Length: 332
Image 1 (spheres, rainbow, N blue to C red):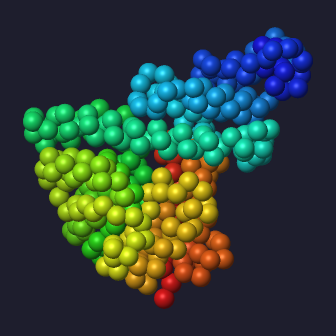
Image 2 (image 1 turned 90 degrees about the vertical axis):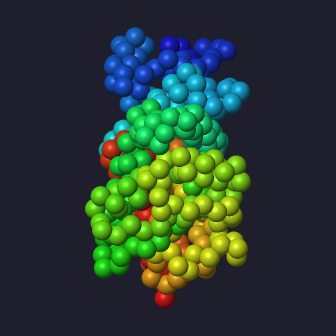
Image 3 (image 1 turned 60 degrees about the horizontal axis):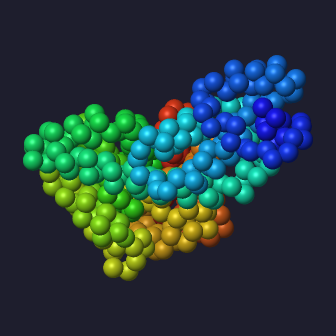
């Protein structure tokens, strides 16, 4: 407890450590705040406690030797995501995000989350492929039942498809391209599955990733998925490169892990849009509130992007889905 008081400027013991929240469950933050107030006679706000939890989790994550799925990283990231998807008043969110040291820490935390997500996708792609000799139904079950975040992908795909249809209500989708599809292209599969259930027309989805191993893994996995993997194509290439034409795509996705800052993403968007046809949609994944601790908030309302893109919709989930959806139309 003295360490907590020291960090908050409410005490001054020596040789403090900030790892007092190592085993804190974010669900018990309210109770913990009450306990701190009683035991230390200090006014610890919920915003301070949440901020300290995020900072402490980052310190613990930095100590791990790798970010492959395992008991410890699953616990840390699970608690972190749970903390960041909680809904708070805007004033509380600002207090958390403005807590001393938090903004400076965020680039490192987002990088760790990005690396961990890549490891997660590789792990579950390999897990699903281990059932390949049992047939396509077993492989699909390994994704839909075993993968703990499968329904998050389903919910996000539905959210994104609704935004796409709202921005392009009279257009029959023929081709969708997903840039940064990775080794486990669940968004593409879930999007196709949702379209099949709600439309008579099924578009082709082209998956692009700059990693040869990611493309090889996803191509292999798609091949053993049977009917669920139909209408999917795979190409290895870099976003916006001249070797990949997007002129025939009605919708182009840019994955959340493509670029880790607004500046990086803006350059990528400009390169991608140059190869798209006027009227096509660019779908971008962003974040809001505390979810910006996991992914950067992305804006298309910058001077350069507004010259080539017309913003259509921004959708913020209030559920366990982490990413927001930004849809913009390529200008004539």
